[in-house]
Image 1 (tube, rainbow over the protein chains, first blue to last red):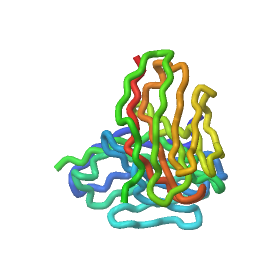
Image 2 (tube, chains in turn red, orange):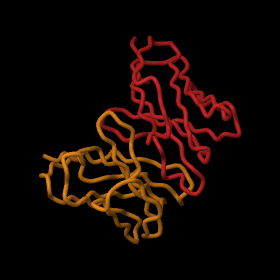
Image 3 (cartoon, each protein chain N blue to C red):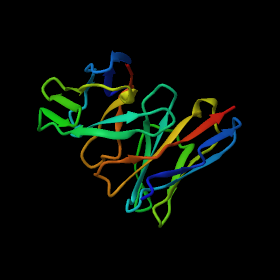
Length: 113
Length: 112
C-alpha cells in the first residue's frame, strides 16, 4: 500500500531551472513531512522538512509548499545546479514514531550544464 | 563526529543462508531503525529499537529480526534468505523516538 505518492519518476532540467517534485499522502495522521536527497551509493540525507501548520518553508535554494486540505506537498529547487543531480524522496511520519518514515517512490533529478 | 556507520558495506549470500548486518548510531543517539531499499525504490521501514526493545515494526516477516545492545548499536538478522531480499539495508539513528533520523550509507546485500 503506497501511502505517499510521488511524481514525476524522473526529471531533467537545465542549470538555473526550477525543478518541482510533487507528493500526495492519504494518512491524515501524518504530521511531519521531510524531504531526503540521495546520491548513488549513499544513504538518504535530510534536506528540509515541514509540519502541516505552515504552508511554505524555505531553506537556501530549497522550498517546500504544503497544502493541508489537498493533502499535497511539493519541493522546489531554485537556481538548480549540476551538483543537485540526485534522487529525491518525499516522506511522512506520524506523532509518536518519527523514526517510522514512509517514503515516496523517488524522483531522479538530472541537472544538465 | 562519526555519523551512522554500517558494516559490512557489501555482502553476497546464497539463498537459504542467514545474514547479520551491524550498525553503530551517531554519537549521542539512542534510537536505531532499519530500512530496506530495493533498487529504484524508496526505503521501507523494517523496525525500530529503543531501550533495547523493538518499538515499532513494518510489514516484514519474522525472518527479519534485530537486536539493540546497551551501547545502542544494533544488528539486523535475516534468516532463510530469498532472492527478493537483495537490497540496500539502511540504518538510521536519532536521539529519542521523535527527532529526525540520520541515515548511514547502507549495506548492499546480494542474494544469489
